Image (cartoon, rainbow, N blue to C red; front, side, top):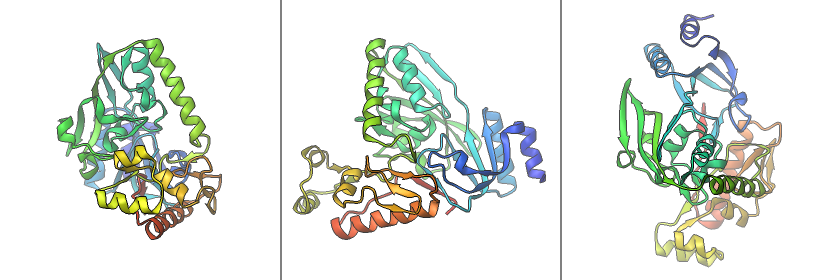
Length: 321
């Protein structure tokens, strides 16, 4: 065992693994080994591990639940840190969740507490840390909607960032363009009826199950929806195909719908397949490699560019490429 491995074991014990297959930790069920894989449960552990990595010039990747992540077949020659701080505190209409809390767990906890505004997150596959970083959303809701502030670790120091500090956009935040690590997020909700809110959770789960391939290995939505930047571009696109009115009005076209127009549902390369249920999902049929997925991403982007004049951008994060 290397000296670094021994030091990591002193910090987190058996929660450190060497040459750990990332296929065990990503929703895609794909990915080669991480040189070190560490699960952190406290701020003190996180600080010590980051210091160790910095001192030894080791590359670091911080992850949550493993959604929206594609790790290369060769793996990651560095340290993967999984955020496993999973505390939830609810006081009145305020809820604070640590970064490792599953978004779905917070949706259920707030609904049970009679707090309205987060039921849309019941089908999100990731964690609160990832949701804040990428302003995750679905069913018309976004993480920023009820967020008050987030605590982050910046160069070893704790900082509290307001909603304006975070500069949220569509699947965007300032954190994506920094080295900040989300520690927790605080939300302010409205009081609601717990029974009705829990019924809404089940309705949204049922709706998601019927329209998305939740039973297969997938990172979630592969591409961001396409944002139309001008009226001229909208008219150009409308000449190519009949855009649903709600998308035209929102100036945002569903990536899944665009992929449907390219007749790519069911397209398969190796073990990776564009879902028959939803065009913006690529699923692992059981033998997929990261290279298979990357080839499908390239195919979709090329077809969208050449045939529709649309430049799709990945929502999934590529690690180790």
